[in-house]
Amino acid sequence: MDCDPGHDDAISLILAASKGSGLSIEAITTVAGNVEVEKNTLNALKVCDMIGLTNVPVAMGATKPLLKKQAIAGEIHGDTGLDGPDLPEVPSRQAVDQHAVDLIIDKLLYAEEKLTLVPTGPLTNIAMAMIREPGILDSIEEIVLMGGGTFGNWTPVAEFNIWVDAEAAKLVLESGVPITMFGLDVTHQALATREVMDNLSEIGNPVSEFVVELLEFFSKTYKDVFGFEAGPIHDACTAAYLIEPEIFDFKHVRVDVETKGEFTYGMTSVDLLGVTNGKPNVRFATQLNEGRFWKLFDRALRSYSFT
Image (cartoon, rainbow, N blue to C red; front, side):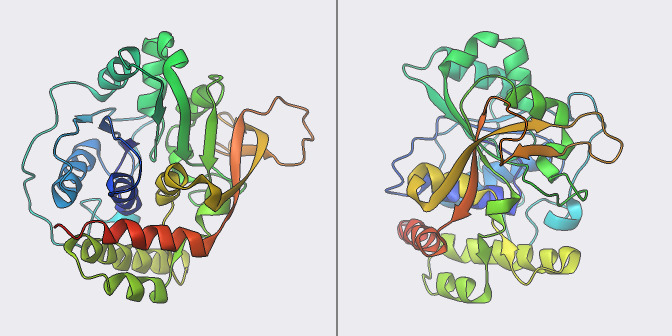
């Protein structure tokens, strides 16, 4: 799981690590995105402490995009990247003494079976790993990413994760690896309404309370910045798909990334109608079954009753 926690990244980790998910998290790597990579790494370690995920290596990765200057989203996630909950200032452990890109390469090269990569931030680490060691491509089962869409949230046409490092995104989407993309078209259907948060509050364990605090802050900033009445839990869609893929509908389409346009940098050109005759390279999520999604969410949080 390659991430930039981030409220919705944190929730994605919590879903993936829940009892009964059927998933095995091999490593967590961090990248500059929502806030600086150092803060994202601390946040990943703190979330691991919260959910008891202390046996998975956490490695810090790219401090900036491949070519651009660093850009962050402090107005959405706050100065720490996880504003809202009251977390300890210092996590119980440190990140491993290995760069995230090297850890990704090692995990893929020495895995006994193919691994799935789950990037929920800018794709810088994944692109760097592919550049440094092309041999890893054959060891990737699938890349399940949050990013892109047919419209934007950081510019009129570009979603934040892709816009931050469009060059990295272009390289990854053109790698030939199977890719499943959760863009804004579907993540804006995963809205944590007041009713959802009230229902989750009734679970009453420390992890569910932590998630509700995340959602409260995230929903407020989305209302203040974008005028949304509820916060979309973008990154959680990736973990939900890996646990229960039937929750989503997809189209197999061609997606290209714009890296040169003055007004369209970071745009994902999603060919839903096949007008380009381009070879499909992405399973693009189009629809979310909200009832099943929130049932999975509830079930995952209840599995943390041991805390």
